[in-house]
Length: 181
Image 1 (tube, rainbow, N blue to C red):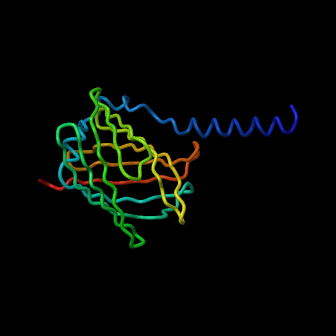
Image 2 (cartoon, rainbow, N blue to C red):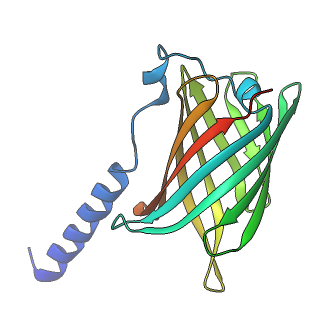
Image 3 (cartoon, rainbow, N blue to C red):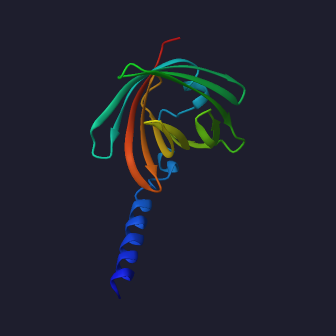
């Protein structure tokens, strides 16, 4: 095997390892976990969230809070998310989420490329989408693989893995708390 062939083989192996690392467990693994997560029930009313973004080395780059006003009309939900970032900036994302006949979820937002796909089982939701992420005057399409776990009827934890071309860029951690009705 010559040097060029070895380099290509090493590059392809690295890409394969990177892509395999993004696969993660199947959400059905959590089917027996309780309490059961029903998005229409949990995301109904006002939810407060606290989070942080860590780069791939684990350094906390940004912290944020979110207030989510959520409501449903049948199988269609609206989540109006208002972010306050640690650098003093604010942003907003409005999701329209539709429960599909097979129990899965589809979602859209202005900064989401295409359609988000979600699947819930037991206390877990896996939510995958591509986000058009502005960074230093440019916009990058970044893959998000969100895992949400309902802890009790008020608290849910979320861990999101960000990647581009199968390579891990960082992680977002969020804690949601539903306000009492």
